[in-house]
Image (tube, rainbow, N blue to C red):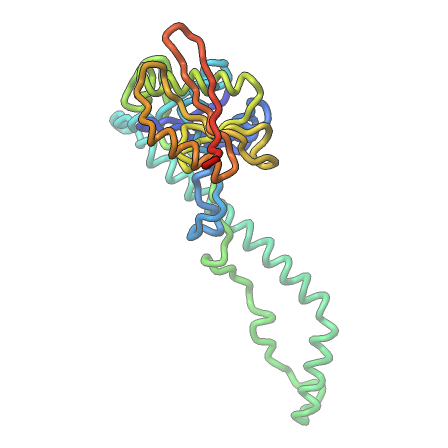
Length: 284
């Protein structure tokens, strides 16, 4: 079961395996919003967690493939009992120390193997230096750092930064069918209209992503967005809601400007959906 962590209406997936399952099995793409561990100061390439649209998270929950969870406050420890968070931190520190000792052992073994492979060249170099200084072959030469004990600096230690992060404390399930501070979307007219459109287009085999950068609600792709450009900009317009003419013209011109078709999606109270496609043709 996929676990979707929610906080103030935001849905996040921290597991790489679950993020892959969401894309490959359910055709939901989401958006990677996390910084890469080795390149944290750039935003051109991002990693986990995967942020899902509210409609994507609701669809997974409705299909029974995912549960929505939230982190709970750390409970105060009983008398004589170590706090849960403190024990988690201590366990993490022990893991770091064990990892350091293992890395130092491996680095020391690799250093010894390297010196063994270079032993002949080192001996030849020492002989040339003794010859240049006029020393006898039996002169003892200080080998310096080569024979000193190897110590791996802590700053050189490799530290794994988990993406499916260790959870300090417990989690509890969130009811996705009723509004709450962590999941306020159910019952909102805009969300209900968007979800009906999202579910219908997804059910027809399309891929969908957020469409705010093109002025719509969703971008609609004929296949995986890694292979195809979006064909439609979906704009949800419930029947009966006003749609100013200038907004309509601007949206249609923007869609044509980025080589996409504006798709007006109008759900009504009866459960039906009407789709109208518009393209700006300019002056004739």
